[in-house]
Length: 245
Ligand SMILES: NC(=O)c1ccc[n+]([C@@H]2O[C@H](COP(=O)([O-])OP(=O)(O)OC[C@H]3O[C@@H](n4cnc5c(N)ncnc54)[C@H](O)[C@@H]3O)[C@@H](O)[C@H]2O)c1
Image (cartoon, rainbow, N blue to C red; front, side):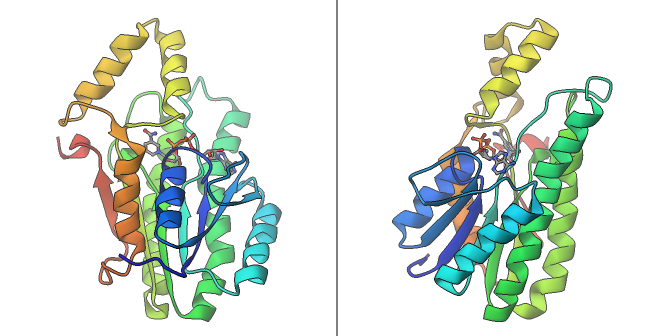
């Protein structure tokens, strides 16, 4: 896999799986721009809230002004909300749609014309095991991730003639900074001891442990590389076997 000289945009590149991809791409000689509300020194950080179309427009324009093109996009920015429908306020619902779904649409809307002009692009969108299966206490989050699966497929069809591939990574439960507050929220709502929740999460995946950010990042790098030129519109599970049960 060679990323030498390539230009990448990673949303959510400051933490977790987005950050793991940022670090691996940078090691491979890629110029990486992390669009994130959190700061990072692992890439060229552009402060950007992906739920705001204007901020994305400005951020992508900044990358293009500097680099003249964008080759790779990993849209990882997002968060989890542990709540069933009654526990989800209208504001919570609108916020998670704005970040997890509209944020992906907006970044695609700005990056795709740049890739089309360059007649090249590899894109990976962040899905979840919830692209395939439902989970309790996850109505709004699951909805956003299932929608990303559909967005992957239709965008892949539209842009295949332009030499732009669009795929979706679907991780299982991964030990990232996002997981701990989610588990704590579930612990407060259910009264189940924290360690019991972690044990259940580990045992739910046939490999019997949580995934690591780097394990997802290695799969994403392959999907972003030119080593899989016939792969587009694919929903790729990396979930310790969770969704094959
Ligand atoms: N951890 C898991 O088990 C898991 C499983 C499947 C999918 N996911 C998805 O993977 C993605 C990354 O999650 P992670 O687990 O690495 O978590 P993380 O919290 O470590 O990373 C998420 C990153 O997104 C950024 N972000 C959040 N809201 C943003 C916004 N409005 N604008 C710009 N940046 C924003 C955060 O600042 C952070 O850097 C999310 O979309 C999440 O839903 C996580």
